[in-house]
Image: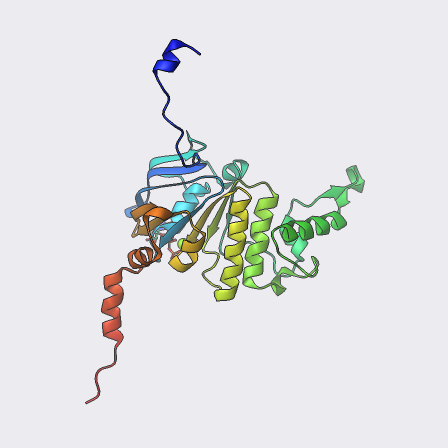
Length: 276
Ligand SMILES: Nc1ncnc2c1ncn2[C@@H]1O[C@H](COP(=O)(O)OP(=O)(O)OP(=O)(O)O)[C@@H](O)[C@H]1O
Ligand SMILES: [Mg+2]
């Protein structure tokens, strides 16, 4: 070791893992509409970053930047610490960024295994004899889903017969199988009841425990808080804050989300007039 290295001690490594994805002061305009302005957050492998906000807050715009659908107009987007502009969703996928959209892009009448592969099915044979390896596809589907704790009765069952929560789970398992490092979920629990939402939250935790970085969009702080490590709150395109879990509690998160004062006002308005 050289003299200078000893004389110049390197500061201890940061306690948090290096972020896989990071946005700094990011902004996006649609004509004169400011969809997003000055938003910063990050997510590391094995962590869940929750993006919270009301309708029109800019949540989908943010994840569309992360997934290559839009490019930011201002600010920086970094992957593995390297500034980047993703030209399209394919470029994001090539970087291991998989996005599960709310409408899921599944074919209800097709079997689960077909939906699991959707064009990337395993084949056997060569040249003119090349054909789908259905047995293998079924087997992989069953195994991958079982690996996430999803027990399907029959991979030939049409996806349309699955519940909303199970369908989300198939989409998550698919992203994991195809080697995603980052999983982005746009409101996967918003249309679900309490029990089904719980099922999806469990798969989010599973993906996290497998070392994926997860970006989870929701407007429900009760869904976000138990599973999240980090919370970014959006309101009309601006950030109300980007908190680590240690910096914010569920009551505070709920208050920020609901706009406490607005809710209170509403509850007065909704009260019955006292009967004469
Ligand atoms: N392609 C677009 N062209 C014009 N305006 C857009 C476009 N996409 C989004 N916006 C505007 O940007 C703002 C943020 O929209 P965004 O879809 O990101 O909100 P959101 O938080 O996802 O809302 P929701 O909870 O309803 O899904 C809105 O005012 C919206 O009208
Ligand atoms: Mg949205």
